[in-house]
Length: 514
Ligand code: PFF
Image (tube, rainbow, N blue to C red):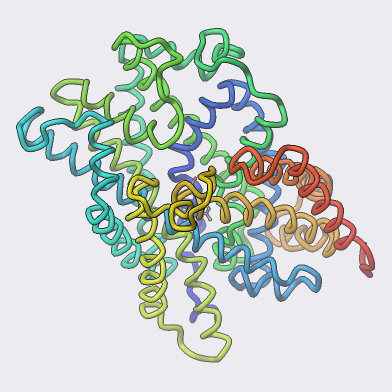
């Protein structure tokens, strides 16, 4: 049975693959821009606290659940829980929806990498690529839907080749080379970024409390609850939690491995890369803006523009070697995108592999991965052709309804349901199931097969039962109101409060064990 599913070749291989899943566009793009929007240093502190008290706890719980059952996300929840059997489906639908835009964004990185490579090879302003200023490039790319479809397809072919290779032969192999390479490239970009004149302003923005407001980057500091919700949502996405990935990866892990230590290393590495990515991106963007005579308030640190407009401008204005740094930067983002995308695909692949194994058949990974890739390509076409709403096929256009955050383009639509609803809801229900239906002992017994620590047991008990569900309710509220404007503030609190209390009672009442 074990052999039919496959397993990690080594613990370090597993750790690098899990770090690969965690380190993605969320770190290099989402973290800097959410930090930019949410007051710099305050966001950083809240983020780190949440990563320790919520992220690590859910990470260990998910790894333990996967390893205990030896199954993918849908079957794991079905096997252990009477009341929450169905939440595994949230953990497979969300990665499938995320892949619709993750693959397109990976395709954008591929285009930018090649543009910069051509620019470097043929010289700046060579007449072939007359203008690689970020704004022009981005606009041209969005309105060339078929080029976007082509590059998305290219990315999907790469992911297909890796995932069809299996756990140790594909995913582990890619990450063993990809992760160290990514780290080296990131260091090169950091050095270049920090040696730009005025880069220190960007560092102060990140690390000096209150500087973001005092220096005029943002007009006023957002409230605590709003930062908590933004940081919580970002932390979950960045650590690949509540999407079935850690349950799936845990199901291929040996019994003697130390889950707490592994979880700690993954959380630490992911947070470190997010901060390093911030140091690579923010000072460069700020320095370039100031050197062009912009006021700090005018510099774009938010949204898609940060990665594809502001940073492209930085490279375009660096002189002869600028495009080379562009190639390195977009290549590193591409590796990060691929290492995350393959983990999202693996959640779906493991589901079908388990089906075959259950029926006593030899799973045909190649066929499974092929059909998953086709299905993802079909939904990704919508996102690619839509061009962030530029090409008139956004959900709002098609339905003829008022344009809102969730329907202004297909990317936001997919993101709304996956990252906005399925992820926080799934995480809240997972912590209630583990903390109250099954009891913390369920996870701790599994954790103890690799190590035992009375301190961790207490820490886990309190966090999984109280801290995680409450924080997740705030994140859910934040996602459905602030992120997507689905409902007003008061309604957001009511919806998430009712869900929290209702499911809390549902999880806790009538269990035989405590
Ligand atoms: N953690 C990835 C990032 O930061 O970009 C994205 C991601 C991968 C989210 C896998 C969820 C997931 F299951």
